[in-house]
Amino acid sequence: MHFPTFRELSRRGRYDSRLAEARSHPISIATVNFGCDENLGYIIRAAACFGCTEVHVIGRIPDRNFLKSASGSLVDYVDLISHSNPHDLLEHARAHNINLVSAELHDKAVPLEDYQFDFGQRVCVVLGNENWGVPEEIIHNSDVVMIPMPGVGACLNTAQTGNIILYEYNRQFSNYVRNHEYLRTGS
Image (cartoon, rainbow, N blue to C red):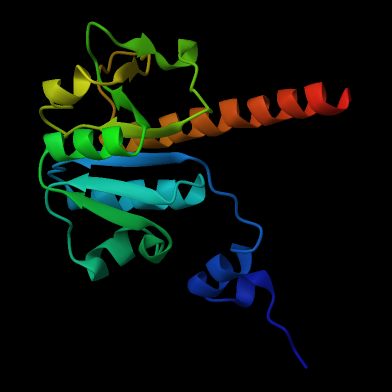
């Protein structure tokens, strides 16, 4: 009997084959009224790749078939949670003890490389609208981080920002686990 190799499996088959070993983390992402539906698909893809099982959407959620294509078929592996406005997300975060971390070019923003995620509570990274960013109501109720950009450009695409922050969270989380394992075992 022939068992298909990883490359012979469908995209869905490859994802399903990874479910048993996949890890999830206590992090989610919130998007604010994205103007470009593809960005939400890219965020869903990044969320699934980096162990984030929830994406909060303030505003309209595009059609599932569109998101399936834009997310590389990963939309079925991430829960989409709808919020009608920023205040609803804030109430959800308070009710579930979630620390909001907003990605924004703002006076109170800390460079991402200097920010330490708190692994003792759930985190939700808030990504703003492509044109007007994260609403002030959320900024005033969250930690604010920014990605230093030494080049001529001054603003990343919101989906790219999400990818970078999820990577940094995973990097810090791996170090945290490794350090706590060392402290526990002494090796």
